[in-house]
Length: 121
Image (cartoon, rainbow, N blue to C red; front, side):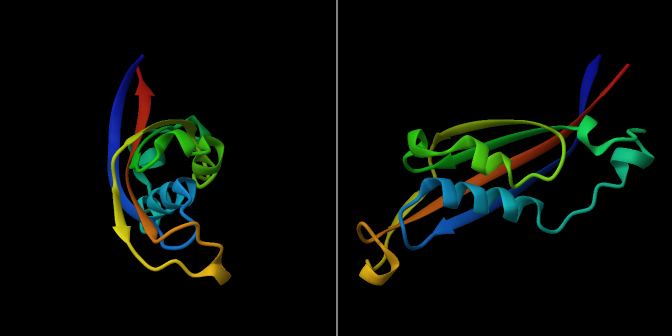
């Protein structure tokens, strides 16, 4: 079966306090899918179950080795999900606030691309 892309959405996420790359990555994915509807999955591609769509996620974030992949993929409500995490994004100097459990002054910024594909004959 051939895979065909239906949509690619991009998003950005920030963890201003806590210095958690997983939080920034999950927010980037959530931002990418926040304002969409995919009627083409049913009306054009003919899927009857939203879990039959393929959802490929690519995230670039500082400290990619610290990303908890299951937490990032949990943002997606449906689909056969995969995640690629790579080094990227941005670190911006913020202000550490002890009451927010900051480890340092870093704000972590992640970017994500979410691609929805379907298989057809």
